[in-house]
Image (tube, rainbow, N blue to C red; front, side):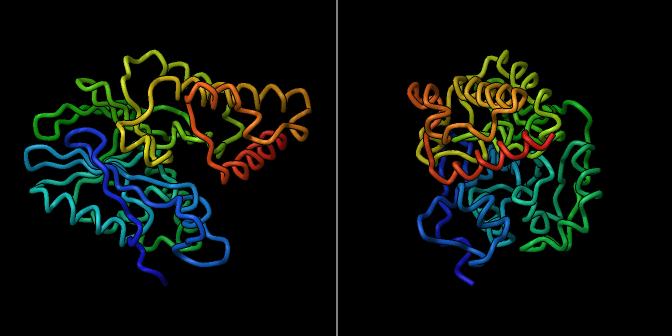
Length: 293
């Protein structure tokens, strides 16, 4: 196996907000040549977890794609002087919780929905490729909203049913910064719960009403994350993609849809999102998922 963190980049898009970005490295795989969630669903598309560090306290947002990645995150924040470490999970999917065991001695915060989903999918996660076992569960749960302080910074955790029913975003209201998890994605969202797409569209409209200045997604372009993140056109781009895809599926025309580059040409032209060719496969999977319901 290759050095799991050889291509990990530590970015600081805003003071005290760190992104641990890995992937989008042409010709490189981390786990194996065969199909696996780590390479195909995370590393190949690019993935980040985040940490907010202030006054010897840290809040880690997702524990990354492997124990080695989580260990690198922990070493970094401890090197910055963090003595108190908490974790918040964006949702239950494997590429966001694979490093939980590294933080087993910390408070791990999640929606109750996330804890329920992890428990329901425990066997699936343990037998996936690569496996996540033992699965370290969250130990502090909330339902809709939770307010925290990380040093002198106020951090709000909010539930949004986007991408996954248990979506949890981090909102730094004082700075106008949204840590979006998988509720927003560049180039396009990955439809994991096709039957709930109408809800996802409504929830994206709700998110768009917030006074957001900058958005940091877990899957996006590293240069844009490093430069501070995306503006609110990013929300509209994700919503319009789902709306157009849903309309075509409803009319029975989804199978004939254009390639992704053409399908989202208006959003690419404005710079709301950027084109990354591996998302063509995501687009095809999204079409199949919506066509099947």
